[in-house]
Length: 150
Ligand code: CA2
Image 1: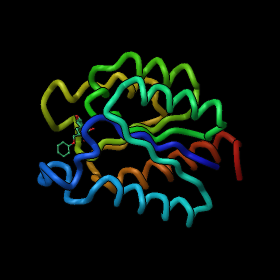
Image 2 (image 1 turned 120 degrees about the vertical axis):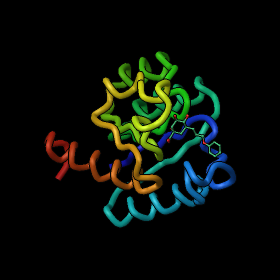
Image 3 (image 1 turned 90 degrees about the horizontal axis):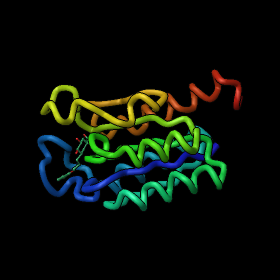
Image 4 (image 1 turned 60 degrees about the vertical axis):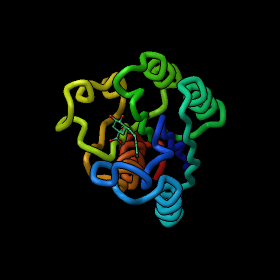
């Protein structure tokens, strides 16, 4: 199985600023570790980060065309604003897990609403970088329970 992992705006800055909120690890370190974790479980992961909404939508559509089994997405600030991103995920009908490093429900009110959550399989928040690995396991369990793999 191959999964697409998408990271939205400003997540390329991880590890360089606001370490108290987002940790000290860079996005490329997090994605490298995730790929190793995925390989150990027998999965493939393709990771992509963009600061642009349309680029993320293009990748979501590509995930469908190229027969990815599911999507793990940290949409960054677009979580709270983007109907277009939500429509893209609904449109491809691929099981999607939403990840946030921080617990968005314990933060400012504007971060507590997600346009993505209602169409996601589930949401993993507040576990920092470990959330991506948790999402990978959750997605594979979801697909196994749906009888799509063994
Ligand atoms: O907690 C998360 O993962 C977020 O998706 C991170 C987004 C934020 O807008 C969401 O509400 C929650 C922001 C990512 C910005 O990352 C930075 C990292 C270092 C320095 C500045 C920003």
